[in-house]
Image (cartoon, rainbow, N blue to C red; front, side):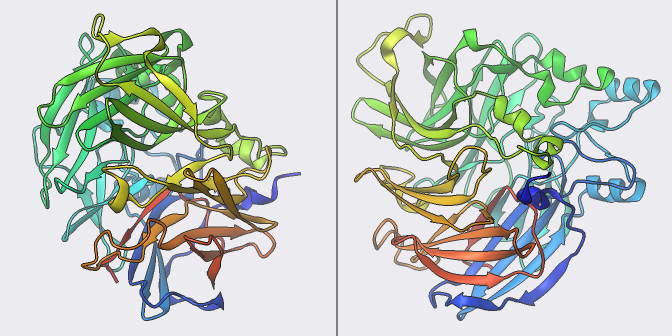
Length: 499
């Protein structure tokens, strides 16, 4: 018998345009004004071919607009080139995370010599505001799709107008970091030079769509990194030992190899923390530690002579990737996913000696910060991104085998946890919105003064609802009915200026 949450991996084929939502219980805070915009996969089965992995499906944008104690909902497909072609043919049109098109021998050769035929624009991981007139949906390559935040309608393909736009720079993250003090966005691309692969860190200055190179870090193999860390002065790339080589990536279409299957887990490499100074782009050093794997960096902060790097680390290493195959998720026992927990890695910035560019042995200290399973981490970013933080929010599970069936708030100072759970309900990322969002008050108020907003799948009613929790007490503030079940999405952002 399939798991009850498997309906969260069914197709959503219905679009909804600007529908007012009924407040089923509680009330919306009167100060909440703006829009939560999320993206994620909602089409998993096409007419003639199906996607194989949660991270593959065609994207839909979900917009929840709040104003004057009311809320409105819009759900529209991201009409990317992938969506347009796949809808027409009923086939997978571009290489996704796991799923690949059915290419004949001739088409494989054409793709080998013209790699741009391989990559798609399926912005199903995250959204980003570049400036007031440019919002994009992103995935793990730089080929983004622009959309209109007012109505979630697709504008078209977006390419950064700079020299980094190249088939050699086709790996990035959909988790850029915003530097509140510098008013700049930071991210990196992996440069696929066979003999000298490297990570190119760049920034987008306030309002600009043109990327400026900050610095480069050479490596011997490219690590799979879904996100990265950033403190006030440093960029942190955690090179997990799930690695590939540019040659393997270039030959993927010839052998029909899925993107993530071109990576190999080499535990003997260990994890390498690569730290770059944002001020001059120079490599500060490389710190080596045991093998570990994480999707999400939580936070990084400079404390005295140390750099703290907080990650949500999987005990089973990259085994979690295989646990997200759709066939497995839909099957009996598919809710068995690896435990991920909040860990801190303390890197000594001073007081140690670099040997061959690396600090080795006992130089990295590891701490277990909390016990609950934690993923999709959220905190008061605007207030705490350039300093310490106390509270962290995320999805969790009540027990192994339950997929993610609860939300958690972790108080790092008191070592206390609070939970929201309801039988038959499976919540998504609890986006934190501070009470001061969009006001001149800036960082005023308590760190946890705000709300968490989560889209929750209610398997008892086979529908989803929008849940608002008081971020301070972690008690339910409001629940709003949604017109249908929404598949499990990935990430989203709250924009105070968008209605």
